[in-house]
Length: 286
Image (cartoon, rainbow, N blue to C red; front, top):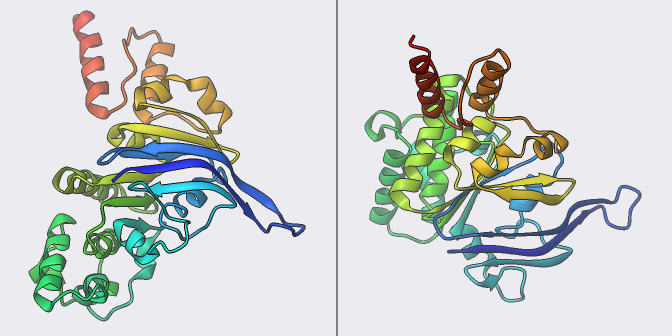
């Protein structure tokens, strides 16, 4: 299921003294099964943009096409659009509310009118996909879980709806390093096993470099530029203009080169950085 945004414009507080243009002529295309990241400084329009993808916000002008259908057109079934595009806001665990984890994850598919057996199957599958032990956790209160488990539970609840695309707004925010790694690994597993489209909003340039097929950079409510992670992070000057930094591995390579080390290439992942440093040490005969 492709997602196409054409000349999107959104204005908050239109006609008031607080009027603010949040999106201005934004266009992008996301192919079926693609992993796309959207980055930008706070207030650049990232969250406003993704809230248009399933109709939570309506554009002042422009179009959002989901599977070729303009979701702002009259007669469009927005609940079905929202089932197809699962959106998780930052800190989604605050949306947990049921007395048991099972009931929380089952809430969405139950409201779809599925049979009890079908709901049970979806809950079990979603818990397995997110790394939550069904036997150990399904009857526990979601409020008794760790921070990382709560985050996974919220994502499982969306997955149980059977979305074709998953939009994640800062999914690793506020987590300890171990939970951060677990969530990132889980997101990659979801993509590999489900083959669904994933759209990631993140301030963590390391995560973006590691998982993305393409990256869109937003600045002032517009798309500043886009490309593969290698293309985007090679454009250091434009990133700096947009108030963004580099992945830690690139920063390390630049520091080593500034110190006189002959490090070749621009590593985007930890494995690439280790490989380039090993090659440098081998050339030096270390």
